[in-house]
Image (tube, rainbow, N blue to C red; front, side, top):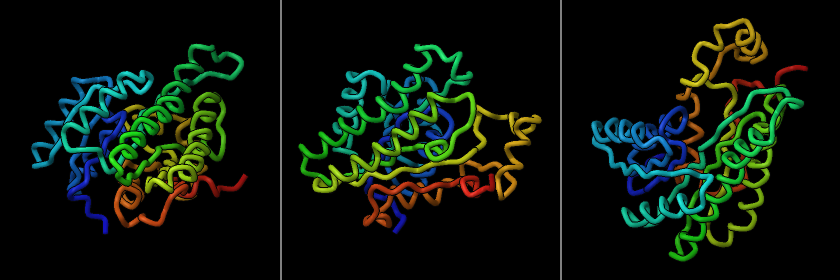
Length: 252
């Protein structure tokens, strides 16, 4: 049920971090990957990784804050293998500062990417599906900060909470078109962005608040990702799957 042969998956933010890992994971299960991101040189490195293992992959320039870039990426994906069966809405950025010191530019940068960008890409993808009279599957990557908050990242938490609600709203509206919309909400996961942080005193304090007493790895997300991307989740829409080592249920 978790086999992805015959499916094409479009992934935003695929040049690094979780997006890159998701691309490799889904390709290993047989999916053809459309990898989209702004950093084209890093995309080409990902293409080499997937092709070296016999996978199919297309790199497309994609800036989710620009509607024209989104449409060009979708057109390229559709020209390659038809409308993708799955979209992984993964592109995201963060800004770290106390709320009183967060500037308008930082707010706009985070919300434009994490929320508006996810909305524009989902909408553009859905329009292609409806025009082709084809069902589809959207996976929005949110965060445990959609459910609980941490200090110093107000724009990020606001964007991820809003994306969780947008997931449910789109699931309701688009079910009649055969389009499923679910969310994957990771907890703290070690990636190249935060390498070394969890060896610091503040990082070790974070680990102590996680019931499993460890930071997640990108591989810890694979089960939920494969469930949502495959037909095994055919009766799921509007759901959020949290993968966090029990962090959300930790005591106050």
